[in-house]
Length: 328
View 1 (cartoon, rainbow, N blue to C red):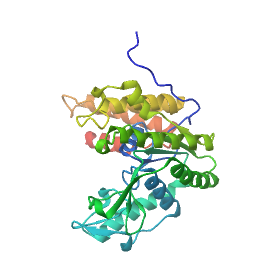
View 2: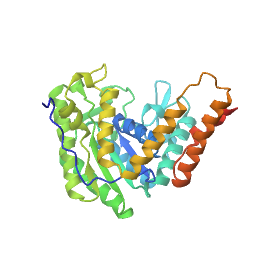
View 3: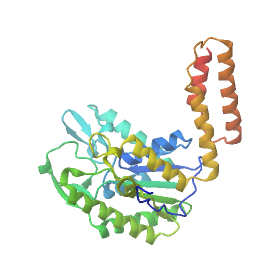
View 4: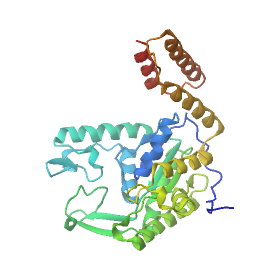
């Protein structure tokens, strides 16, 4: 007897391996998946502008990353004792203009160095509602709690999003023909506008994503994160206490489906090896000074060395440092 309706997982998505260069941008759901990818041995570049919600802010961030934009003081504004960028999350803000610019530019240049050599770009759209600054008419990525009277709020259109990304993806793929792009729609609900407005917003994103998938066959793919939570799990026990964000259990469930759909066999084997190493390191001995425990740590180091010899692109710096600290 089935008590749920399984979501059909797409076929033909890129078979990712830890050697691949990945970048993830978009809502905080992209951050969750990016962190899990890092735990699995990948080295993803995660949200170089911080969390972004609407598609036009994501595309603007990508264009600035491609061109290697260098931010200057005139790109910022001062509000509530801090300097902010309308294109960046508040994590980049600070009371010092120099510090804010340093944080933004260092992070952006790191992303710029990678973007033309990516194997996979994963974009997560959160909402089609966007805020335009009245003085410039430009969509902002973050209002930084400024008064709503400074902005015009509107819902982006399907064709508007499709046209913007058709131009952007055409440029990216022309520069990097091996690039594969995975689109997702965040299952996080934006309830401030009401349930109906949230559904209209998500529907806009879903239709735009489908247009792009059809326009770039073999390059653009869709992963059903939204459908897995809303249609397969469909229960408030899979939400956090705010009843808006997915719970850690729900995130783990969607992650397992992502692994099942997007990981190559080699990646699964490496992920299991890394899991075993981390499980061993999590072991807390009764006698950490004993020779037995030192031998145990030495075996972990040996296992890391063998895995690194086979897969040189894996980064075990933190694990090695932990072993060295405990062996002292």
